[in-house]
Picture 1 (tube, each protein chain N blue to C red):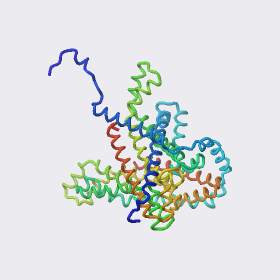
Picture 2: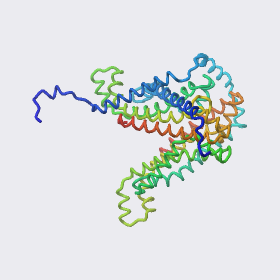
Picture 3: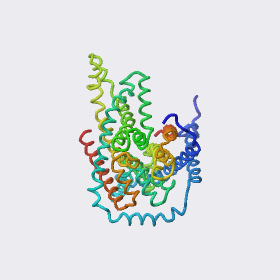
Picture 4: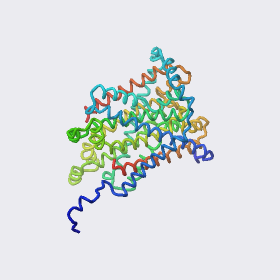
Length: 207
Length: 270
């Protein structure tokens, strides 16, 4: 395995770039979908049938590991980055949706009453009563999920869903362990960078 | 400096300092730029997406009827193996993570060099995905459940150790100082000072990690590290989608059962 063989550095960079693209787009769409789903799943805001169906959706999204979801999307959409993005969107909705719903259930209802007393509409109650209380935590979950998506985006390639996972698995099957070592080192560097970035963003937003 | 009456009303009240607003704006800008650049350059084949609904329907048609007869022959043993991998991996991880976590906790081990060494161990364990750990252990021990168990264990050390160290650092110093004052040896300080305080957090961490490991051990077989993933991979490679369906249902059932079990245990233990 040692020393690592960086001879194919251009292929490694290309794979890492695709992994990062998968992670960024999956986080973006996942966060976008998780916000309404999490609100719908909060039992203190929604009627029981709405929150239970949203909870069932979240549970289904969380049940399978992203790599297994990626297999199904590879079959449905074909090989490539889109399947990886879809798989990680599902994972993001499951994770952020669950934690966000729990955060919304813990909010103080006094502020909601205050906003309602001014005659605010339901949308107004959500925007000025609920969201200000939970937004820092939502940003915290989102940055954590971005971090997690970067880790998983390096792995969905093992089943053909794009990113650095494919060259890693190919090198492994060819017993080119020095190349495997180089790719793993590159992945660790990117994962570490993502962790630093998400910690920085969390500090900026006080999450 | 005394201010003229009325000037307070004219003063602009801002929630954030200019530096904070600039930092937030930079984050927004970076997010937008990252999304735009990614969306513009990501490989996108529209033909694949157009027939996705058809392919999805085809997938469901092929999965039906679910081949339940395959369960006792090819799935049950693999499922049990997956649970063994997850449980043994968690046990091994806890055994290794507790000493490392104690070394990483600044109040338990007041030696900065040891703290940093332990934190380095925890960070490197977490940086490597469990699938990568599995690939490494397969290279060493060959394919099978042993590689999977070690992969789960090594990936979990970082998680359990980090959270355990944080729990130790949050422990109240009162009881610990009292024990030290009566001359208790360090082993007694650990078992009577720290342990009662970190016990709830410890069980919560172990249960959470076991739950995660049940999910993770289901995919390790895709790279050959044993468990139900092997059955899944075989069925997919042979395009036996009705067998894939029964494997997926089995994984789903086990994951849900694990989550219910963890919720119940957490209520009892904590």
